[in-house]
Image (tube, rainbow, N blue to C red; front, side, top):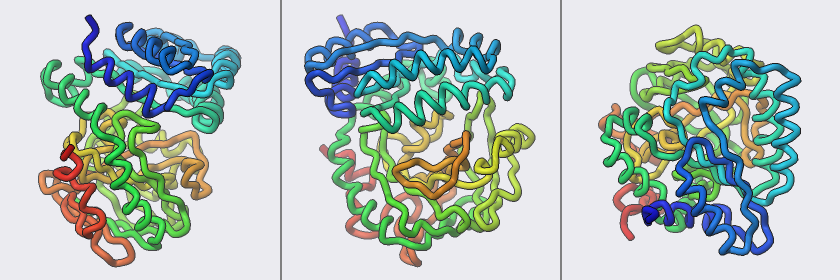
Length: 374
C-alpha cells in the first residue's frame, strides 16, 4: 500500500505545480527516488489526461559520467535530453541523493563541461523557458543527517513542508511583491559584519508559492548590477559542487565581489573566477516558509527559511533580469531570526522586517504563525 503522503505530494506536483492539462506531455526526471512515487506521478498525470514520460537517473552513475566527461560526450547527451525536453509541456525534477557529497571529487573542469552543455542548453534555455516545471528534493537519510534529525522525524517534517497550503502563501505574497516593485534602495543589516546596500529599482519581483519549487516560499528579484556595496556575512553552511562552505563573507564594491572568504576560501574563489558574471549578484530573495526554520545544506529548503534572505552570486533569472550573465548561480542564505543573531530589512528607509518578522500590517500575513493557520 502506498503511503498517502506520497500520493498527496504527487498530486500537488501534477495538479497544482504543473497544472497538467488534457493532451499535455509531462517528463518526470527521477533521480534516486522510490518507484512508488514515480508510479503515482505517472498515474495522476494519466488521470489528468496527460501523457507521462519518465527518465530514471542515479547520482552514483552521474558521478561516473562526469568523471569521464568529454565535450563530445556531453554534447551528445545534450542533444538527446534537449530533444526530449523540447517535446514536453511539463517537467518534474524529483531529486533524491543518498550522499550529498557524491560529486565532491569531480574535477572542476569536468563539472564545467556539464554546466556549459546539459545544464545550460537542456535546463536553462529549454526547460526553464519553455515548460511548466517544478523541482523537488526527495527525503533521504543523508538529508536527515544534515538536518540533525531522525529519518522518521525528517520525513514528517518534509511532507509538512512540501504539502502545505501554497495557494494561501501565494495570496499573501502579493503585498510583498507590490512593495518590492515600488522600492529603490534596500538596506540589509544582520549577524557579524553584515551591512549591505543596493538598489532593486525597476526590476520585477516574482512570488514563488509552489509552482516552480517544492518546497517553496520566497519572493525574488535582483539588485541593479553595479549598485551593491558593503559586506554580507552568511550564517548558514552552503554546499556547492560537492564542497561545504562555512562562514562565507563577501565584500562588495560597485556590485563586484572584491573579497571573498570562507572555510574553503580557495574553492570559493575558484567558483567566483568561473567567468566575469560570477563575481556579481543575480538574485535577492526573501524566504517565508513557516515550516523551515534552520539550514540543512540543501538549497531548495534553505532558501525558503522563514526569516531568511538569500543573496546570490552569478547569473540573474529572465523573470527578474539585471543584465548579469554567468554559468554560476549560487544561492547563499542569511537567517535574521533572533536565534541566528537577528537583523533588519529596510525598503527606502522603512523597516520592513525585524528579527525575521514582517512589521507593516500588509505583510504580517506572511509571518509564520499566520501562514500555519488553515
